[in-house]
Image: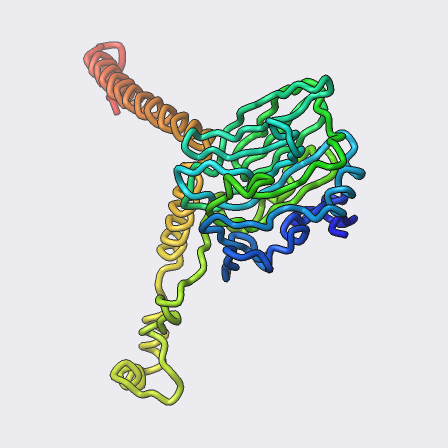
Length: 343
């Protein structure tokens, strides 16, 4: 059974979780290609390029899931979706029903996530939420925590959660309902793109189910190398063992003092260059995903302008004081009562 007690995939959250890729035995599904690398280390990632079938939970796992869900459910995805696509991420469907019992869809074309839920009086409710997958070039982390009255959404590490109210969601779906991921129960609206994490937490997660001090930047893309790219090129400045080229011969002629002098590059210059590169890379990776960073940038620009104004006023005041002091000294020097000369 795929429902297990364990720690969360990327953080210390201890809870029941369902690895949805294991539940559908993703390795045996035709049309799904395993990638060499995703955004998370040591976690397999998969690419979905065309309509696939077989992403439906087996009946025993769906029944166990229905039994274990107690008024709350959290969906956690890490992936990137192809542009201009509309795909199902998670769906609970009842045979013969005109609408899904519970479904989360990702509509990249209209830049929204759509949550359809059945409430306890049998009516359907639909909520729309912001969609991080509109940025199809980068990986994104999305978590949607649903309970009977609220839905809370987390996106990457640079956005606060989004919360909306619901009206009594009914998690006790019928026993004959089917559970599917990345497509509906009929195999339609299949997800197209890449996905590395598809996890269900059988509770209402109240914090991001991932760490935000990871080495990768939010939205950083780490695609796998294709076959036609070949092996990585060797560094031209690195010599292979046993080779003696012009660079090797030139280095042999250098004395120890020459080598030491060449190595003595001012530490401050290296530090400034390193910091400049780090700052530029970090900002370029975050500016597109953080409204707060943009706001801070505008605030810093306004402060810079104010400082420039104050510097201009200070220079004017300094000139004025100097002028007044000069005039006072001239008056003191001309007075017959004062013998001390002006300085």
